[in-house]
Length: 321
Image (tube, rainbow, N blue to C red; front, side, top):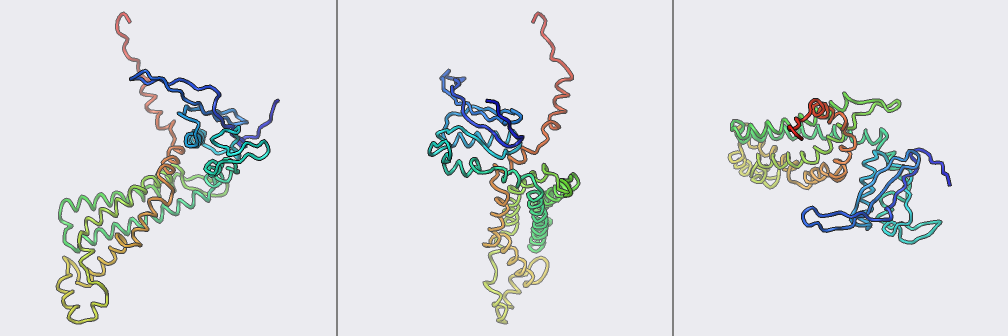
């Protein structure tokens, strides 16, 4: 029976009935693979891949790959009572397994697509990138001041470390400026460039904890060998001893204590640790952020020069071949 499908409404998903043999190149051992297929109803755009089983993990994994390949999320994902995806077969109201339902497959997945495709999602992550840029500037200044206070700025290794921290900070700032410069209009809204936005997230998840660890190495025991409380300064004798033992290459003993207490708040306290965890996972797990970077990359542009070079000459054919 002929059916009419609305563009973007339904993605039909199922496993093909027959398996395909896969042979181990080293042992010639044969193993059956199950072919997953996903077809958009209106355009007939098709995605297929081989999986080792029809279990839930392979079923969900195939969906993730299919949606990444198609580059969009339909309003509905329609399956055919597959055992991995349906807990109880029913023609009217199929009961989805919780993990399957959690993948938006029996819900209206257009909500997920809408969130990723509208300015709300761009602006949320754009302001997060700006916030990260400002935090890195603060941490860079903190690293420099720590090195000045303990008198190590002239050491070549410390100069190298500070230079690398400066480069990391400048890279995130360049991402922010670049996504603004490459931004486009979404209706009446100006939104930053998506590719650079997701690239920032991928880099930030690795960069922030690395920067914290580096500054902790620069500070060494300086953030630990401190008065237990500001109340210690209320006692004249304690204050005198603190002034004699806490002085640095620059500034007074009080200046050093203030700096190192602030450094510990940013680097090692519960507050600082929460910021590390936040920057590592605010945007989602790395598989998600890297997947978004993969999906928004202009792969045609990336390979155009390569294809031009490969197509500019032919390999010599041996005589008699």
